[in-house]
Amino acid sequence: MFRFISAIVIRIFLSIYFKLNVVNVERFEKLKTGCIIAPNHLSAWDTVLIPAFSKRVMYMMAKEELFSNFFTTWLFTHLKVFPVKREKADVAAIKTSLKLLKKGQSICMFPEGTRNKTGADLDYKSGVIVIACTAKVPVIPVGIVSDFKFRSRVDLVYGEPIYFDEYYDKKMTHEEKKQAAEKLKAAVNKTIASVKK
Image 1: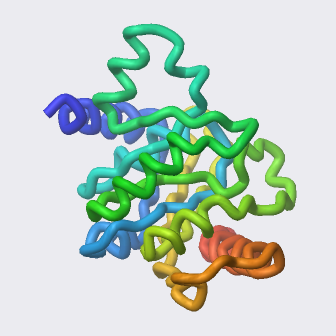
Image 2 (image 1 turned 180 degrees about the vertical axis):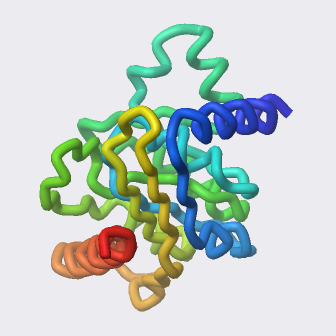
């Protein structure tokens, strides 16, 4: 209930603050399985924008530094956010992700690994691919386009789900992880390009 009420309040605020254009979110909402939402990462706004504008509950990873006191820990837990250590492979966060995905839940992960304020051409991390293949769930590329200034337009575009099933039940090589990450990057860039035409 707390998450539901919070989402409504956040949605109203964001709709007033920005001019929002959410495209093809039903591609995510209609999926009956667990999945990973994989957007580009422009701003801190992304972490509230993406889950707020979907009828389906979405879990989020956030850097562990945000869970620094009782209040923020309580707040983020109720908003379906769980901590992750960013400097190394976080076994606890990976286990949490796999558990949620295998229960049919969805998780949002930023494959760039950090905010990309300049829109630079960053390599995508392979963590999203490895977790998706281990849990045997699709990845949905999402493109976000905006400068996030007051009353500016924010485009949030969902692409078609990608199934990396050729890598299920096998140990991926470094080259295979790189190729799969490039495939995801191209799909995210395609959603971004659809807005910029």
